[in-house]
Image (cartoon, rainbow, N blue to C red):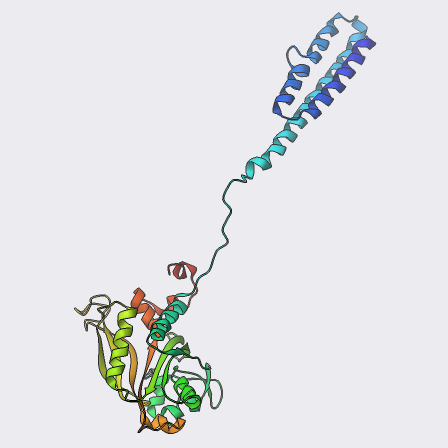
Amino acid sequence: MNDIVKNLENVSQEALRALEGAADAAALEKARVEFLGAKGRLTELTRSLGTLPKEGRPAAGQAANKAKEEITQAYKRALAALSQAKAPSQALDVTLPGRKPAQGHRHLISKTSHEICQIFAKLGFSVVEGPEVETDYYNFEALNFPHDHPSRDMQETLFVGDKLLLRTHTSPVQIRTMEKTKPPVWIVVPGKTYRRDDDITHSPMFNQIEGLVVDKGITMADLKGVLTAFAAAFFSPETKIRLRPSFFPFTEPSAEVDIACVLCGGQGCRLCKGSGWLELLGSGMVDPALYGFVGYDPEQVSGFAFGMGVDRAAMLKYGLSNIRHLYEGDLRFSRQF
Ligand code: PHE
């Protein structure tokens, strides 16, 4: 009787070793069959209990149950351990292509501003910049806006201090540049500008590109020629422009420049409100009064200037219906360009 109990203990220990040492599912299954299978060693031993004398059976039976329980538990543990060890290698497929980090790109405004400057650079213009916080002198006074003149109201100025303001246009850089350099001047000035204005076509912060040419014998024909070349390069080669009389304190004569409607080509549609034309920029011949502020001789030189809304140009080129799309920072919008 003691022999059987001893045998049961031995088999149990052997079984535990075999199950715990199984390196893979096949080895584990082999060990299971060897000990727990219908013809396995534990089963054989349990059967032999019937040959024992009656009084020895309860103790041997308990030992057999204990052995079976131990081996079964060991099998379950080994099975769980094996499937857990396998899980990570199945979850991680090292052959999958990696995730690309998101890559940014220029915002539509910077892209358009850059593109416009490039076109003028090819026509011989240099790119210069100026401050966004300006003095009354550069933003108004030296640009021939008289004190307390209603033309200042057109500008919806945001003041920072008594004589300090957020520039309402890029035109102050005309004065700053002419103060520092002698003619000839051929410059474009990209930059942010500010006005108290906010609706679907106006944003309180917007972007302009100023152009200034001062040289010998410059006429309005040069203004029209340069802007026609620009419109052809920026929109499409056949784009027509027209000059419409207007007023700015710092140009004389002044002209609003329209382009033939980008949607209907001039037939008249909803975008151009039936007129066939879209307003693109303000321009004119530099008012000789400005030369007095910067020490140029109006008998020697003449020039033209223009100021274009970059946001407006981008809206026209890409058919945007609302200027706010440009400033809301919604990636679903930005990613389209
Ligand atoms: N500064 C003017 C504006 O913002 C545009 C302009 C620039 C007009 C240069 C004429 C010449 O409205």
